[in-house]
Image (cartoon, rainbow, N blue to C red; front, side, top):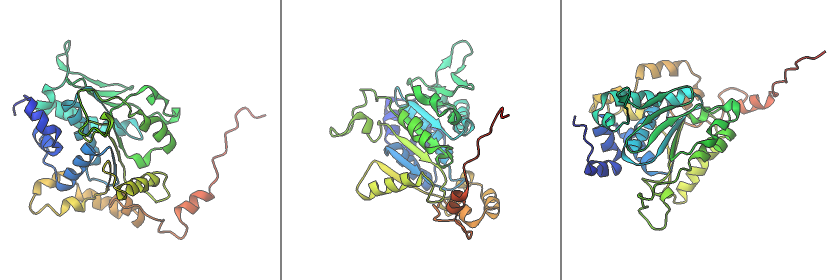
Length: 314
């Protein structure tokens, strides 16, 4: 494939992320992934409650990489409940840098080593591009109150496994608030009634992906709020939920979609889970209550906080 990226190509890709994924990354997306990419590309907030194996982590890598290549001066954050979770997307990005000519041609190269400029340290994982944009992941540092993120400025953020964040208050206070980096003036909004930050394509975007839990989980309030805004006419929010069946039904006409999902593994996992947990993890449903006699909420409410460890007591 030709590694050149012309101005006309950039304009086409900016207005069609599915085409960009096909040409730049060589990925032919199943219909559910097309819907997901369009949502992440044009909605300022996307909440994705899809089940296991539907491609949420892959989508964060696709969108972050395309934005960093096609748009100037952006910081694309990819974060998870652990540093390792955020690094998953970088494994896709590293592969594309090594194997996809257009991606490699848009990387900044280290003049001493003659290799693409990538950072894989304990402080951050980064991929830097000629556009002046960077895809960046840092340790979430929940034990330290998330203070490490205090000096970060992100244009967009993809939060993976959001329902597994150890502390939702820290998540919203320290991470979501970092999506604050100004949009360069060259990207004028499409409508005079909106700011550059609110532009559907060039504005600041947040993606929150994670398998559902019980409806008393703190994040469910965010899901309900987004759904209410959509019902009231919001065009900047989206709530998605897909599972393996949304891919499987296209197998007869598109056998290549089998690469997107491991049905044998999903079946194995489903067989080992209680029904309500399988509804969450596999099928992407928020579950009202546990299938046991006592609800999980009642069980949790009956527990006391761990007693403090007394050191040096006489």
